[in-house]
Amino acid sequence: MQKVANKALSQVRIFVEHAIGGMKRYNILVHGFRNRKVDFEDDVIGICAGGSSTLNRGMVRLQCKWGSRHTPLGTFPNATRRTNMDPTTTFCPNSACPARGQGGQGNIGIHSRKDKRFICTACRKTFTATKGTAFYRLRTPAETVALVLTLLAHGCPLQAIVVAFGFDERTVAAWEARAGRQGQAVQEHLVEQPRDLGHVQADEIRVKKQGGVVWMALAIMVKTRLWLGGEVSNQRDMPLIRRLIERVRRCAAQRPLLVCTDGLVSYIRAIRETFRDPVHTGTGGRPRLRRWRNVLIAQVVKRYERRRVVETERRIVEGTPARVETLRRRSQGDGVINTAYIERRNATFRERLASLTRRGRALARHTLTLQHGMYLIGTVYNFCTPHASLALLRDGTTPAMAAGITDHCWTVQELLSFHVPPPRWTPTKQRGRPTHAIKRLIARWCGDHG
Image (cartoon, rainbow, N blue to C red; front, side):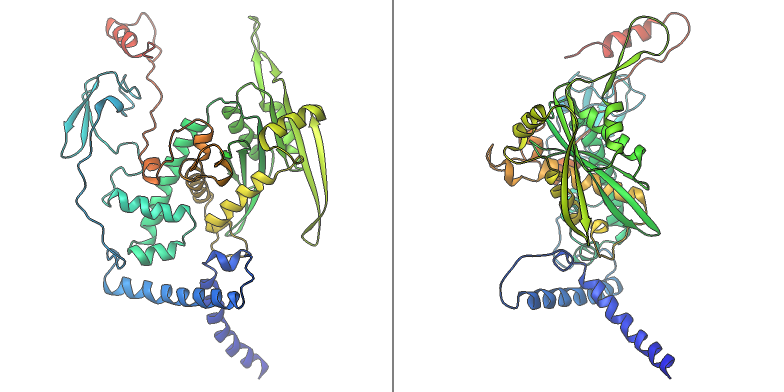
């Protein structure tokens, strides 16, 4: 009799578990909040419960009655506005063209204003204005796609977007993958350029995945709050940390640099081996590697008991305490050696990426999905999100503006429509002397055009 009763109870309990899981789509129920208003918790639970049941019923009703193309919350005009086509700021994206990636050289003309197509006079190929962006070959208006991706980048649940706009989940997921690849290209082209970083903090995030656990390593420039990049791996090991430090090195100039991390020992070896340059002596053999000067390393080691920090130890691995304190004060002012800025950045990632949320149901299936979401959120944070701590410089200052990368706060549509130029053309190596045609191409397209 007890077995039969337990079976009947489990059949009822499964509906309650699904209802609770649906309510946890809202971040306010997953993360802690501070509000001393009377009965505020009851109001929040009631709103989330009503919204969850509305989402579940509304999604089924919309898909059954109208299909995936119905837009219940409003329609968007299909007629696109006439946009200015400027050939002087456009470059040829053809990988076989000797003029690829070079703008303002007079080789780009307008092929069709109606279809928004350009033509390259060097290779005689035509291409659309959206070639090389996240909007390439999309039938949905760019404004709608940008709006959906803006909601995704700020933590809106995927199920809510499906119900509100009537798109299929696979369509929205494909747009997120496009935006992630676009964000990675923009990040590598604009952010990964040598600059005086001063103070960098790095940390890792433990991410639950279907069938296991993956790790996400991130780094941030403290002074400008600029996100320098991230890496995702199945193991929290040396290859993961080495790839992260290599991204930091591509962003750094040979200036005094302080790197603050947690107590993971892999950081010390990765930093020492990455920040090196070969010394060419003109003799045969592999050149000797010389370490960068004034690369300082500090670690913050925390000891936990019952999930609470009970002791914090600060270590200086490389450099003198006076030099470490000087670099730290230049970037963050008063205080002590810490990793607070990268931990605050981790909290933003956990808030906006559903698979990073603790005690949530949205588990990631593929590591590549995590990487796309990471770059979408990271680039929106760098280029499209004004930072409150940077308001002393100018109101509405983003981390990219503080770092001197951009001069205004980008919209998400600007980010997704940014054209990343391909690498410049180089002639293929071949035996014998180059032909006169190759010489003319080299003189025309391989020289310094300013």
